[in-house]
Length: 160
Image (cartoon, rainbow, N blue to C red; front, side, top):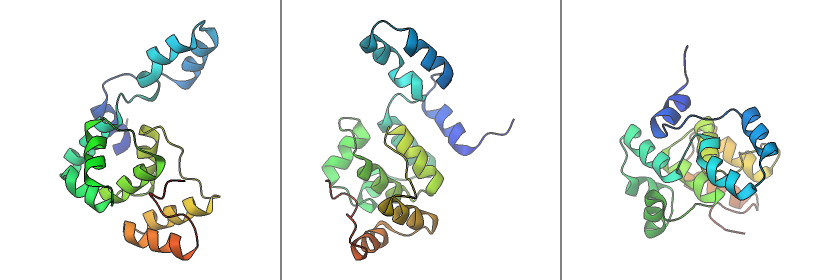
């Protein structure tokens, strides 16, 4: 069986077994306590325990220093360090900025958003369409920010 690199990366980052959605739904429907369900299945349901473990693994696999990724992502140094240590949870914009910092493509960015439990890029949303366009063409973060600005769309990191 051939596996794609995202599946392999997922397996390398988190040894937990990912529960099929149908089984997870079955268990959710039969639970008497939603808080107990969430505590028990939180990491297991996605197959990832921690976003920071995943991005640290990406650094190792790509032979990148986290400080370089943060700088390329145009994220404040201290905040970026907190993301890599797992003491802060990123916004969707910060995840997308990190994707540019890592030099990820479209599919890898979608995976990163999934790991961070953020909504996927959706081409019917103008701003997302610009990001997808830039990712597919391997544009820099600076270029995507310029395009967003020119189109009067909120730039990445401009929290709403």
